[in-house]
Amino acid sequence: MLNQLKKISYLQVFNVACCFLIISTVLFRDLPFFWDAISKSARANWIYENGLKQFIVPTDFNSGHPPLWVSLLAISWTVLGKSILSARILLLIVNIGVFWQISRLCKNNFIKGVSAVAMLLVCLEPTLMAQTTSLNNDMLLLFFTLFSLNSLINQKPFLFTLALIGLLFTNLRGIYLFTAILIIHALYLRYRLISNNKTLFIAYFISAISFGIFCILQYKELGWFLITQNTNYNQHRQSTGIKSVLINSIVYAKSYLEYGRFIVFIVLIPLLLKYVKEKSLKNTRIDRIGIAFLVIAGVLFLGMVPFSNPIGDRYFMICYILAIILLINLIVLLHLKYKNLILSTVVICFLSGHFWVYPATISQSWDSTLAYLRYFPLEEKMENYIKDSGLVNSSIGTRIRLNERDFSTLKGVPEIRKYAHFDIQSNRYILLSNIENYTKDDELLEVQNNWELLKTFSDCGVFISLYKRSKY
Image (cartoon, rainbow, N blue to C red; front, side, top):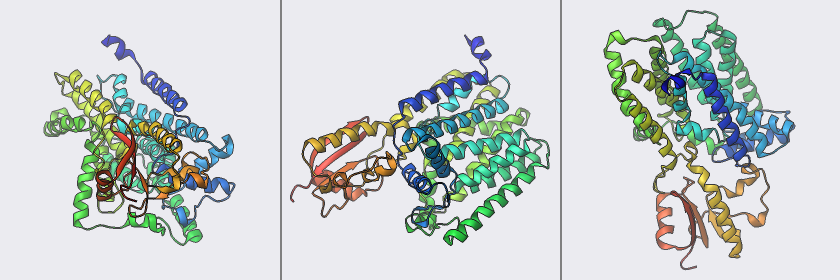
């Protein structure tokens, strides 16, 4: 059995991953844009409605992120028709690209003795799995990050240039990752982990110039670049005080440990310390992955913790992937006696991550595990209940983004079906769900403790509940 597993190639593992991605696309072909992806749909819709004549989105709903993903969405709608399925076909292409890059990273950086099957452990990382179903730009950013690392390690100047350009044009976090790649490059050269191919440095120049031209064009069009003047998003680009930095530091650390990932770092940290301490164990592949992990994690920490933008687990997918590869390598290098038990435990913890649901008073990164998929059937049941009960939607206040279906499901919402804005003082009914993080704790507790519960639907911790004011 073990000998047969060792004969499995990276291409075969990649093909298995692709089969699951295709099946997922078919199963979730109607799954709407969710959470932050809704705003991407709105921007893509503007580009689409304007006939692809302008790719710089107006300030009214521009968060400052470069427009590559939303432009690709608009193009996919133009070519395939405006539908959720068209967007999911685009996401499928990106997902396949991501898993191809993961297979290249594993093949080039797993040490001798590690089977290609170990790549499946990387693929099971819960936030990575969740993001393969999310129509956000994070998988595209992950693709270009992996593409950059692989092109750097494999010394491919042209591909490296394309990868860095993609990094900068996908998301503002691409600037941090661009910086991290530059530092990684310098350290690889310093420790002779790659050869000194000077043509690779041209890639930084070309990509930076390209992004600079975009910033100039955006400034001419909107009067600003990078830091949006949209007040809804600008508040997330502000520096914070010491207290907020400490809180953000805790949230940052929590992101690495959530959803079963804690087991990776419980095992990894002592192994890594042992590896660093024992000079005789030095291995080029482990050094490359270790440096990449520490640099990217450090740059993202410095780039996010001092600012007000909420920190999401999905921001650090590249770090999770590198940490898992590093763990697998160290387990094999150090000949751990219980390696099969450890790896099996990691798999179980990763799968359990999709069932982690915090109390409603604790904010949760809902797009970071597949737990969010359980919400949509509950929403449908609740809306059927509201309809059957003869309740008027406009009498129900909520912060669930039900009124944004023009962009989430790409289907218009008649005025009669729109809900009222959440106002605990004036709403006769209130619709609550732990799937949104906007409702404050005191508001949540006030409704749960003092209002009449009419109906609730739940599934493994995910819930949606309708309340009626006790005295109205």
